[in-house]
Image 1 (tube, rainbow, N blue to C red):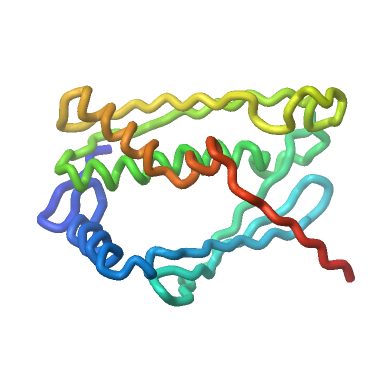
Image 2 (spheres, one colour; image 1 turned 30 degrees about the horizontal axis):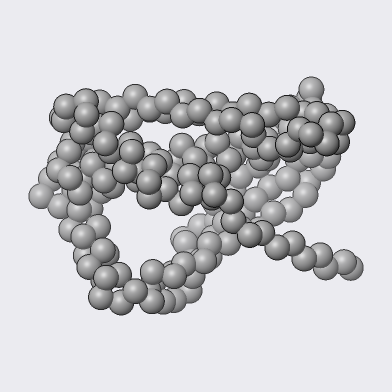
Length: 189
């Protein structure tokens, strides 16, 4: 797929709006505070469905025109019904999606036309941790590998630099590699 470039758009990114957003946030740093939200409902077994719509950002509450829904489940070998990717696979997708979106924005800002961007993300998990069979084995991924294939109108080093800049600014990469405090509260009926 080849990205088109117009006076306003490069790689599908509205460059004027991108720079206007940067200028607005520089002028009013308080509008940079966002809160994203998701809800989740158990369906049966390991199958559950998430819904995303409203969020707070740019100083106000926002809603989308429609809900985004996505299912999560486990494969049969992990006693699931295979009604969707595992939550751990959703995390791999989130990482790839965040890095790819950042790469497209950065390329647009730098005047680089992209022709194709694909990535493969692999994560290694040892079930001994999740199943509580070995306290020395962590519950989550032991390692994650991302391989990008980037084709565009710049030399290889500049294309590699897009990926590196995206990595350095990726919210999902930051959460995965640096962690974030998570609090859990329980309400019972």
